[in-house]
Each structure stands twice: as structure tokens, then as C-alpha cells.
Image (cartoon, rainbow, N blue to C red):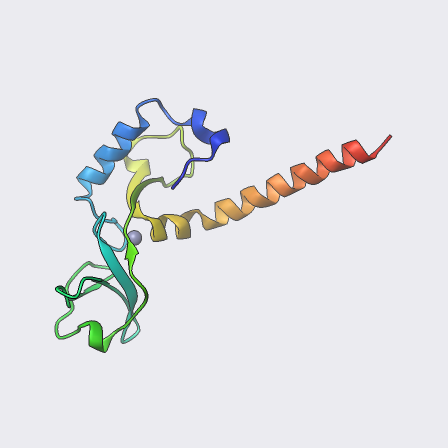
Length: 143
Ligand SMILES: [Zn+2]
């Protein structure tokens, strides 16, 4: 996740090292949906189950997005898979507090899981910024 410029000072100077260590300890895989960092994959469903598969045609295996287990007998042909995306593994703060880099507050997540987890916080932040802008507007419009 890109760090918002106004939040940059909230991260410790060694954040890149901390983040790299978390991702390394997770085996360079998303800890929630098991997708491998840096690989091109396709996400989708198979019999109502969230799955992913390597997008390269050499790999036809399909994996469960909850357990990371390879599904027996499933392939690209039997699943509904979306367009290829490259996995970018990130490090998330479970309490959404960049200053809190305690190991049990950090988790390696792909961009999809990280976005989904942060979405309510981001919506709240957008609303707060919008309110702040409107308040500024009120100040300048009054005499
Ligand atoms: Zn994920």
C-alpha cells in the first residue's frame, strides 16, 4: 500500500526492514489468501469457493484462497477466473496504527486483502478530509 505523504512520519525509519522481515517470515505469501508475492495470478471462484491460479498456461493448478491448498481435479477450464494480476505483498497494521510495529500487529497481505481490510478506515478518512475541506470552505466564504 502506498503510504499517504501526511502519514509518512508516523512510520519508523526502519519500516522497510521491518516490512521486509514480516513478508519473509510469511514465506513471501499473503497470510490470508495464500497468493505468492510477485507472481501473476488469476482470482475467481470454483463451486462457490474463492480460488486463485497461476496465470501462466504452464500452471493449470487451482488453489483455495482460504487455505492455499491445491484443489484436486480443478483447473482453469472448470473455474471462473478473472484477468491476470501481479501479486504485490505488503505489510499491514492490524490496528491501522503505523506507529505500532509490534510483531503481533503486523501481517503480510496481498494488495487485495490489504485493500479490503483498510477500506472502512479509508472511507472514514475520506469523509473526514471532505468535512475538513468543507469547514475550510466555510471559513473562507464568511466575512
Ligand atoms: Zn491476500
